[in-house]
Image (cartoon, rainbow, N blue to C red; front, top):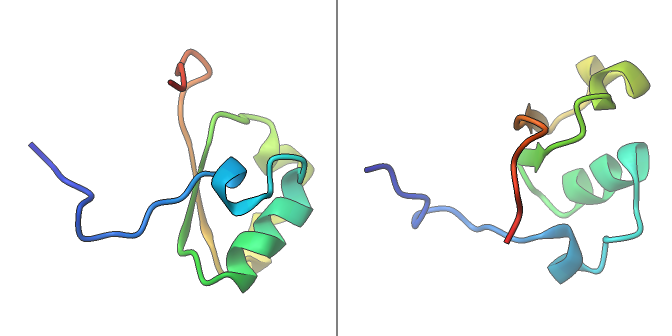
Length: 67
């Protein structure tokens, strides 16, 4: 089983970013030093130019349920 225990993990809500969307969220995460943004927003790649971003974006399937 894989583990993320060696990584720092935070939710947008825990960071106070729950109202930020797309470009603003990406900018905040980059400025905070995050390397990866996990999202279920499958449209982000169409709404943002991700090629100029320093942060990686991983889109999970839309059926993902957050608990």
